[in-house]
Image (cartoon, rainbow, N blue to C red):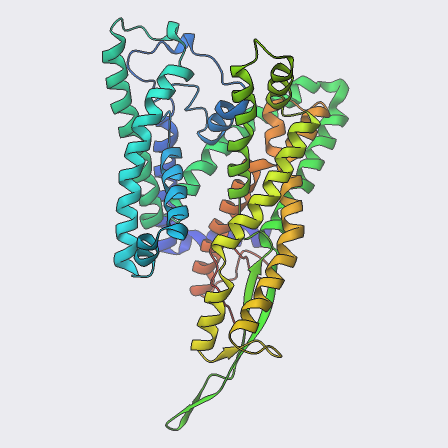
Length: 439
C-alpha cells in the first residue's frame, strides 16, 4: 500500500503528466454531462429504457445517452463506423493504400475523409434514431418535420463535438481519446448494475453475489491474458561496418499478438446476428419457420444464437487478422533492414514462416475470443441480471480492459522516462499500441 501511494505521488509530481490527467478528466466530465442534456422537443419522462439487441448495446457504449435521447444520442459511434469503412477501403482500394503509404500527409487526408464520412453517416443514422428509438408520445412538438430537421442537426453537432473531445484527449490528455469516450460510457453503467445485482440477491443470497464477483474477477484476468498474450519471433540483424563503427548485430523480436484483431470480430459478428431476426420478421405472419427463426435469434441465451455467434467470431478473427497483419510486408521490411529469422531464409520463406505462426496462434485466440463473447449469455442463464451480465465478457469488457491497459502503459512510460519506479513491481505493461519489433 505504501508503494501504491508513493506511485500516485510520483504521477502527480510530473507536471506534464499531471496536466494531461486533469485535462482528460475535464474532457470526460464534459462528455458525461452532455449525455444528460435531452434534445429540445422531447419529454424525458416518456422515454423508455433500451431493451436488449442493438439498442441495448449502443446504450451501453454511450453510457445511457442513447436511451436518454440526449444531444450525444449517437455519440462517437458514427465515427467508429466511418473508421471501419475507411480501414476496409484501405485494404481493397488502391487509392487509399497509396494514401496510407504517404506518411503524415496521407494520414491527414484519411482523417479528413473519415470526418466527412462521419457527418454523412450521422445524418443518415440521426433520422433512423428519431424514428425508431424515440417513442412518438415523447415528442412534444406538433411540427414533426421541423423537429426532425432540428434534432438531426443537433445530433450531428453532438457527434462532431464528441469527435473533437476524443481528439483533444489524444492531443492534450493521456491518449486514446475515442476509445476513452467509449470506455467511460461503459464504466458509467457498472456501479448501477452492480448495486442492482446486489439488491436483487439480498442478504439471503449474499454468498451467490460474492461468487459472482469472484467469477467476474477471474473473467477479467482471463481477458487481460488474452489482450496481453504475444508470440515473440526472434530476429537477428547482421553487423554492418561503417567507417570505424560497427552497427547492428543485436537480436530483436517481432511480437505477434494472439488476439491481433481486438474487438472487431465481435462487432462485425454482432452486427450480422441481427439480420436473421429482421429478415424472419418480414414473413413472421405467413410462416411458422420464420416465427421460430425470429424468436430463436432474438434470444441471446439460445444455444443456436450463441453457436452461430461463436462461429462468426472465429471466421471474422481470421479475416480481420489477415487484413491487419501482412506477413509479406513484415518479411520485406526485415530484408530491407538486414534482419532475418535464425534458420529461415529471408524473403518468401520468412513470409511463409510468419504466416504459419500467425495461423497457429490465431486459432486458439479466436476460440478464446468466441468464449469471451458468449459468456454474458451463460451469466444470464445462471441468473445474473442482464445489465450486470454484460460485464462478464463481450465487447464491453474487451474495450474496458484494452483501454485501461493502454492508459496504464502511457502513465508507465512517463514514470520510467522521469526515472521513477513503474506501476508494476516486475515486468512492463504492454498495451495494444505496440511497436512491430521491440528490443
